[in-house]
Image 1 (cartoon, rainbow, N blue to C red):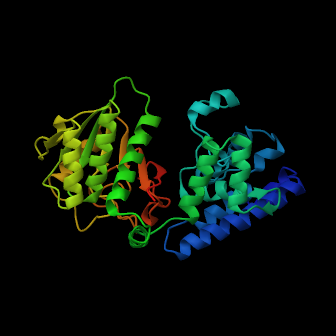
Image 2: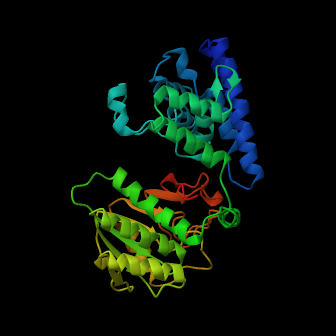
Image 3: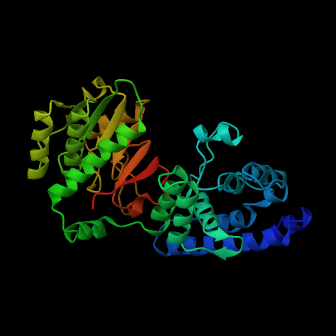
Length: 360
């Protein structure tokens, strides 16, 4: 059944039709920009999903309209993909822990696929049938919900992922012209990682395991381990070989001096470690060629651990620019992107939640 037929069948109000058409135009603009940059998007899904995302508002014009829109989509025999665009578009997403006070079922209502994110973001920038510039709308959200509110933070993350991502080469150039030394950038990265862990995991007497590679991604991990240890959080390091960069060696020594214990890992010992939180600081944007032992065994073990897993900048085994995956790659719950989201993570279903650590 065509969209117009569905609208007519439910006597969809003209005002809502105009709103959906405006959202549709913005969503397709975003989708086309991503596609032209080589990022995979199902344009037809965005097209139909954006036109039907609000069909529940003809029944309920409140926080529950996403659920009603989902049900209406299913009534008309539409695909689960379209129904989920309608279900998860409200605000910038609603977490399970936020649902109870909103009178919603206790489950996540978060846009997860790139098509869901595009429609949600386009809807957030649309006031009735008028497009609002992102910066102005973010200011409105911060005023309405609070400058540090989850809703405002998620809106900014939608913008960062869909319109402000960066390639690894562009990031390196930006770092060169930032006015900060590589050492300062690494310090800022590690400090931000440590802060994220302290702020987001309220565990009693937690332990953290940081798995470090030999390059500067590992260096970020050493700095994070030092900050966590100094904050009273028991932290340990595991690695594969001697650090390759002088800066990484320097921060490894600082972490040891702060009391962080280091263990060398082998394929046989990969499963001998445990912690409440695991940090992947193995590769970051430096993926080259295929994954080898002992890293493959460590990654396979890490993926079996039922604890929060955090990748620094890019999950190890995923190409930062194309999103292509090695045979073995980390499947984190969170990816902490340094300063900007890398192009290969846009719409990538294997990154977990994307967060940004400001290092500049």
